[in-house]
Image (cartoon, rainbow, N blue to C red; front, side, top):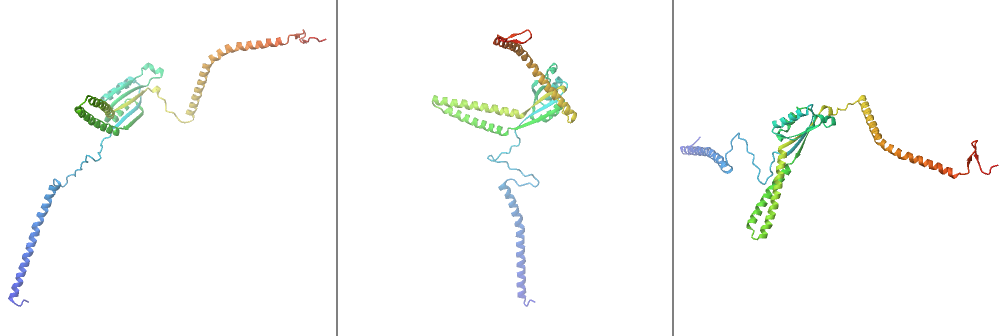
Length: 316
């Protein structure tokens, strides 16, 4: 219990002061927190740029000029070959020209055998089609519909490093030519002008060669040649079969081939043997007759008796 009114008043005063202090503290905290947060949020765009948006995709920073460049597309040269079995060479060639024109390409080479050349074993034909590299697969599919596909190949060569190196050399050569042209404008004597002009001519020739090489590489990358070989059904070798009868047939054909080779060789040798016989037989006969005469001359006293015996001189 509180003993005096004075003490009670002092206690009430302390309670009022404590409550007022608590209210002041709470109001200061609640008022300063949003301001501080807003200031921090507003300061971030000022330092780092625009304020981030929720749900927006993050931007990937672009590589610096000195950093490694990411090469998205490679420089690939693609060359294709395909073998077709067709019954009509002329129609197949016309279809190939139509396919090339349909995909934006062209026929760069064509060699067709005439129908009467089939007896000479030259019934195969060849057509070279150059098409855009992006249409290579589609073109091969269209060509496959012209006849029976027996073989199909695609070869690829990566020339990215060569193209990049050539482009770098072209840029360097152009800078060198620009410096030489500047030196030529500042040259004073005739000898200096002649020397710089000679070097400038050499650099320009090298630049033209590099540009021609770069153009060729880009053309080879952009256009893919397709070599189409056309065969007729009678010139296509059948697929070999396995088993006893096919083996027997192959052995018989091999024997006939060897016999044909032997007979051919014999036919080639016979005329030479005939000529050799015409020359050698008279020589042998002449030699034998000479040997006979030499033997008779070596025994002149020997005579033949009527009864077939030999009559020796001095016999009783």
